[in-house]
Amino acid sequence: MASSRPPTLPEVTISEDGEVRFLHLGTEWIQGSMLLDSPFDIELDYVQRMMAWLLFVDPDTVPKRRALQLGLGSAALTKFCFKKLRMDTTAIEINPQVLAVCRQWFKLPPESARLRVLLADAGQEIRQPQHLGRFDAVQVDLYDHEAAAPVLDSANFYADCRQLLTDEGCMTVNLFGRDASYERSLASIAQAFGEDAVWAFKPTREGNTIVLAQRTPQHPTRMALLARAEEIQSRWGLPAVKWMRLFKPIAK
Image 1 (tube, helix red, strand yellow):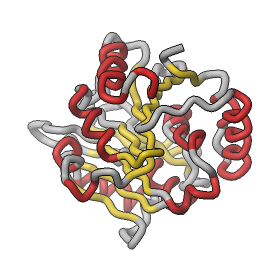
Image 2 (image 1 turned 60 degrees about the vertical axis):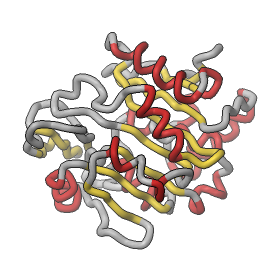
Image 3 (image 1 turned 180 degrees about the vertical axis):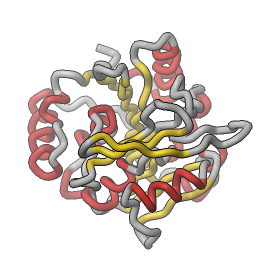
């Protein structure tokens, strides 16, 4: 998770609790985690749900697609897309210390033809013409060190995210569903994408609510989504069948 224009970048620290390593940005708030015995799996429920865009693409095409993360956090999404899904993967992170800690303590692989981390302000970087129309999955998790509200959260920002997507592409965003800002964030996303293109999960126990927005609205039947969820769960170990009870279009 990254801040857009902080006066000073927060200190990055780590902690461990049994089998899990956590990343913090100068506070006790958890900004990411990693299972020590399975470093390329996704440990947190809400981060797993950021992968819900898989419900809307043919699983056989996933390795041919491109993913972009705005905010590196503990690199859970970046590692999963790169290592498990075999995707071309890019992350944008403003804090060089986060990148260094991810490489040293969170098993982030080195840069390669399929993996890159851009040290930049996400809100500015995504307007660069080389990124437009390039990504099938854009995953937005941009929180400051207080983890109070998204740093970039305007309708204009979400419109910029929409411009990054291929026709079949989806954006997923981590919001706080029990916070007063949630409805405002949801309205901004719907303004940028159209209400019929937006889906949302119920909040996790901690309050994280993942919202998904499609470049081109898709509304598969529930049976088709369930079949896709079973395939995702079988191939990649994500609890996608459980998502079916928690995930629906906002327009319904």
